[in-house]
Length: 245
Ligand code: 13P
Image (cartoon, rainbow, N blue to C red; front, side):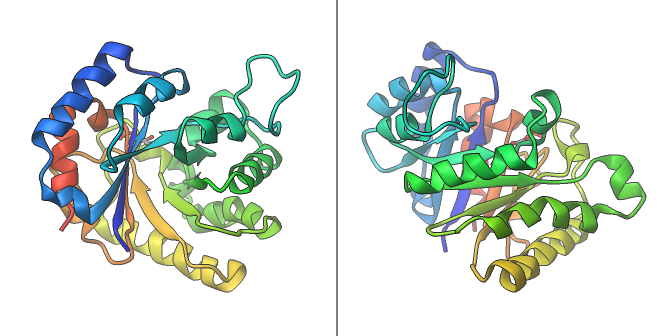
């Protein structure tokens, strides 16, 4: 399976940045791009503009969120899975810790979102991960297991991706030891086989940069990376893509 490299721009960027970054990618990408799927999860407002620029198959579009409501309706400010599909979005991030924390997203909300994404034939990227105190209490496996439990109530038709993003590694420059990443990835892999009976691609996210990407991508069973801050620097992002072995 080819590796998935996702740029999560979060609430950053502009039309101009999209123009210049895509131009930079086009000029600097090597044939390594063929070894992976590069997903640009830029702010939803700019997806349509990026879609008009991504005419080749080199990148696919990702959304950072989706509405709990289906299709169309009187839900002011919401953007549905159907609308994302309309602008060629293929991957949708769900359950990012920042949304769980700042927007109080609950497990029930996430079930609705994942169902909407799957119904439209798109691929959910379900984020899980513990905070520092949970890890220090050595409760991280149980915590992640509880977060994964919502997937049991979903008919996981089609592709689905899980991203392990320990909260203490997001935007901190601290990356877990490779053994810690490996332990959790193997735990999630065993969980999906036992409880969901589907094989999923498993990503790591949290302070991925040009210095650590190669080692992280070489960990057994890692299906790719979810990159925040480093994806805002086009040179760093291209180097992360080039780190795919
Ligand atoms: P950073 O790469 O900035 O740590 O962010 C990770 C992340 O939250 C990606 O979704």
